Image (cartoon, rainbow, N blue to C red; front, side, top):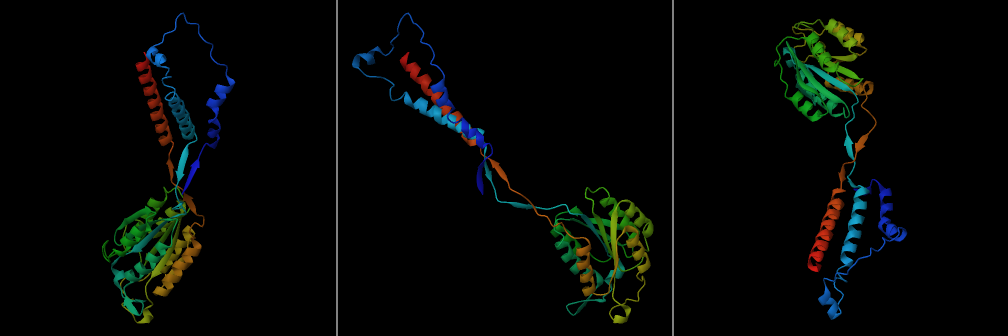
Length: 325
């Protein structure tokens, strides 16, 4: 923390009263027809009333002037640097929570888990690393909805991702609607970098917008889409990967190509982690660091003290005159 004077040059005004007294001519004496001596009794005793007291108004006046000059110099208390989030890019994460995401064909730490659990574990870490980006979350099944709007609060987005449950948005898959909703949220953003990461394990079976049409809308809004096909290899022996809604890799590849993104295939957690590491390289977070230092203005304190001293001097002179008259 530092104490600084914004207008340091104002301190040059401190000797102004002395210069005025030294350089300006004295006021001419006025010829009075009579001399009023209200303190005649004091003269009779040989005392010089107010001699000691007369110095205090001058000293207090000089102190008040110094405080006024200090206030004009604008003292500030500068706090410690505080890091600011940088608006690197707006990044939406669209996660499939349809019924097929319940398939248990992924492995974490030697334990077989369902697809959504694996996505949560890896995508949560990915969100944590996106410092400087605004992150949003879309969940979709038969319907698509925004779980978290674009925000710098990655912890909240991560928490809401972990709270997602399979089937919450219906058992079918509306990929096109998810893309359309993401484009609606991203197109009005101020940043130039707008990215959607779409994770799904199936094909488009619901919704009102065809995935390729939604991809064209995304391309027109300068939204880049990276698609990730999630699900174990049927030959792995885990789960029911030969299920009802096979992965439509052709459509996911076309979506990515239309928008300038890339398609990835995640058959296990290791591949999913590698994909997110590659996405960190493709969509790097902002490297610059922005900080600000909080500023507390202190000029009010010397200004208030100067006013109090001026009032004391004025009150003292008024009282002295009242006693003299």
